[in-house]
Image (cartoon, rainbow, N blue to C red; front, side, top):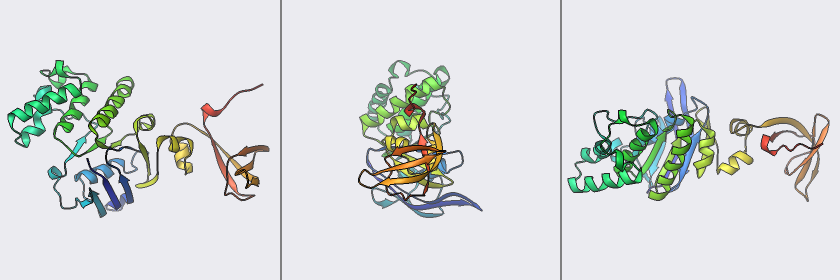
Length: 289
């Protein structure tokens, strides 16, 4: 499975800057979720990685090799869309085998791989069913299985669970994560669902206005955001403005005045008189008499 490197990639459409100087490194077998508000460039980023779109500038490398002149079909990338793009006239088995058939895979190998995929996605009993006979969640599992069956090296998931209801979405995201772990896949998963990203990702990428503004592990992103935007965007929080009134270098703490109330917090490298914003998560609030 590959490492992915994105170096200063930008993408413009006329006067619109969909991506601006985006750089990112994804490790082999890492599961990375990309989140951000609508129109921030999430989907454009993975479309550039896949080859559907060509960057206006910058470079994308897989295992240290630039993919600029590599055709889409030769990049060994699996792409799963939000719209469940199964062939309605093909059975589950035939949908899973489609990519292998296009590559003219020998019949014995195609049958073996397809049977393995049916087992991995727990669909052996529905092998002869058509997409219309399946639930939305089952259809998306087949779409993921079809991408995996091709032997792709890197997987790009563009809001793959967005069209499903909340309960099915919650169940399927853990199945996706388990499948990726079991097979050692490298995955970039674009989603608008913050809970989804925080619950399954190894790292979370926060995007805004075509730029990556923060990257970190889910716990870091949630509990120790580096930007005010991230603190406000990820989860729910209470933002309170205050001013540093005292610092204790030895203890790495600061006293903050917030509307006449003084609060001691583990904040260092701040100066007395400096304005700050405090983020307090609802679950951190305790009531007392």
